[in-house]
Image (tube, rainbow, N blue to C red; front, side, top):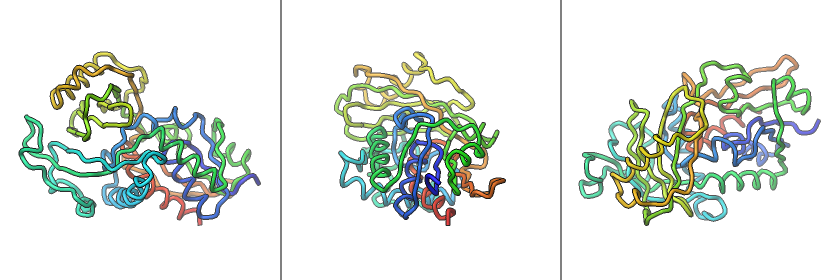
Amino acid sequence: MNGDVLVLGGGVIGLTTAVVLAESGRRVRVWSREPGDATTSAVAGALWWPYRIEPEALAGTWALDSLRVYEELAARAEETGVRIVPGVHADLRLAGLGAWAAKVEGLRAAGPGELPAGYAAGLRASIPLIDMPVHLRWLEKRLVEAGGTVERRLVTSFGQAQAESGARVLVNCTGLGARELVPDPSLRPVRGQLVLVENPGVTEWFTAADAASAETTYFFPQPGRLVLGGTADEDVWSLEPDAAAAAAIVARCARVHPAIGDARVLGHRVGLRPARSGGVRLTSERLPGGALLIHNYGHGGAGVTVAWGCARAAASRAG
């Protein structure tokens, strides 16, 4: 037996789950078809916030569990990629949030002078903003230090993965890949497009997301760049940046912060959020050969937000 747990998927959900399992004393291997910097997770913005994720009650708990971890990791920002950054969520009110909101320190209604023109309400908060390429590399390093390994492997079935690994516990963190692997037709892509520009002096993040619209407006100051967004195009599989969408993203962000309109474009990114009807699947079952299969996928646009909470829940199922 090469390891008693095999985690399938090398994005933030897979790596975080693998770290939790390895640090609990398990021997863990991660198989991923692509390196971490080529996963959907690497494209993420990535601001901690329970956005587009269900079931709401569980998601709130998972998000708060993760928040506490990120708050600790922010003490080593250069190493972990996690910083606590202030900003504004426009068009949101405390009354419209779940019970989790009462446990986010400093989250409050924004005053009139704290909102951009055109917005009548909003919230202010200082919450984790994560540089995902740095964070994914840190997670992989932490896993290796705990005795785990990461391999680039293509998996076509759970039976194949179990037979080739010899593992008695498999954890399915394949994100959108679970649509074919499980198979689970309730999974669908929600395409997100970003524009990276030189930062013209923006120090706070901003979001204005209409759940009923495919167009969102946000900008996140990351080291060496300002990340502009975005889109939420359901059932769109294309990973090619759309020039018109990119121009519209810049224009929307420039209406909030005019200097963004003149910022030099550094690049474009597209990712497919793994949305699932009914929300996150965190369940377990037995494979025909007796191995335990744990599912941890379907996190939509909030994988980073709930990664540690879901990882701990998945690890508890491993016994």
